[in-house]
Length: 257
Image (cartoon, rainbow, N blue to C red):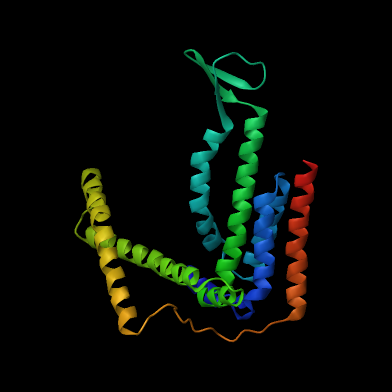
């Protein structure tokens, strides 16, 4: 799905440098910011670019945000909650035996900042992934002198993610056609069998890919065919200014805080 929308985006024909000098400083701004509003500003800005400029449907963008949102929903309560054993006048507490469980203003602020930074960083990566095909990203990183071993691992891991998803979906459809999920008990058994065999099937696909690379003379570098892209100096400067502005805001507010 990501590859399909990346190739279909109007920004796919633009040079990856124009998008990289915007997304990477914005990502750094989300990571170093200590105030919540800078990542929220980056999230809103990147969301506008994804929906209005890259022309990605909002349903697709929302589906990509669901996975990190699920991790946040599971982890934020652990960050916001506090457990103490002596009464405290600050916060809201519930007595559980000899312990007090509740929220404090510091815990809630920390959870808010983590959520803002996470969503801001994810939106930056979504903008780059939904507007730039993977061969263009690898070519851009190669021109930035990133080691070839790292790029080969990046390409292979990216490919294996889709192999894993494709294999899992194929097995799940085959089980559904055989009424493997007709009852809750059958569904649990089918899910267990799927997970037990998924790694074996994926490992077989990985070995086949390794043999294919060896027969094609692979030595120490995966050559990726790059498409010719237009490079606009004006767009590079504009993107760098916007990304740098977010990074400067994050650094300044972090220093003030």
